Image (tube, rainbow over all chains, first blue to last red; front, top):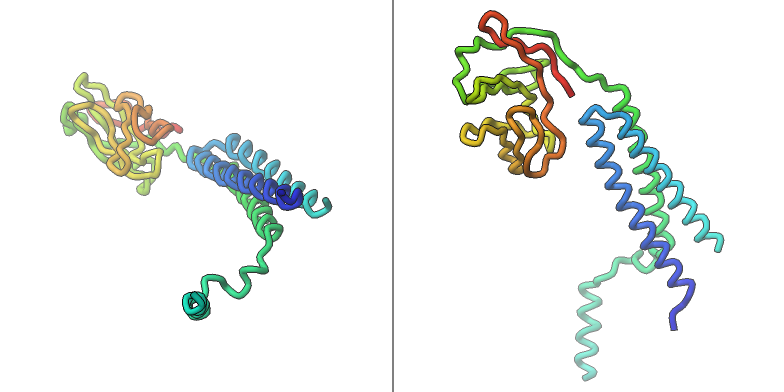
Length: 66
Length: 165
């Protein structure tokens, strides 16, 4: 029988790995925008990256409290 | 049987496959590191966006490049524009049209060369192709078009008027 706590923590871990993968993708978007002189695109990538960063921190806090 | 077990234990003892602290590294700690990494990525992205906002695109000053008759038909001429650090290419197509572009490939910054047979610009690093009449990417990894340089012929001399994004 699976341990629910272990399953939950593993699920959150995988979710955070996906978030970090998206962050790497957004970093390439930001660098591409920097080279293309497109600050609007770079700020959009930064905003989305901040949302993902805040989301992963929120998840971690939730994970610690639960 | 017992000898085999002892042999395996001895092997593990001599060549341990786990580090001393490995068992102390919990899943929660791993997630914590990932969260810190995610925050660092977010901060880096903000820094890049701020840098992109402060960067000004240098369009360059109008200046003569080369006499038109020195460029062979269906050929190219290399020059520097808008600064001496900016490699650029002037192409003269078979129909006589003149077009100039930044020579930096928009994929990873290698220099593009003119392919006479196909009348296109080719990046040999990763096989990227650009249309020689407007600079748009036609094949390979590049997505963005080459930076264009406005040109004009004045008294038989090709002038670069300014770089475009």
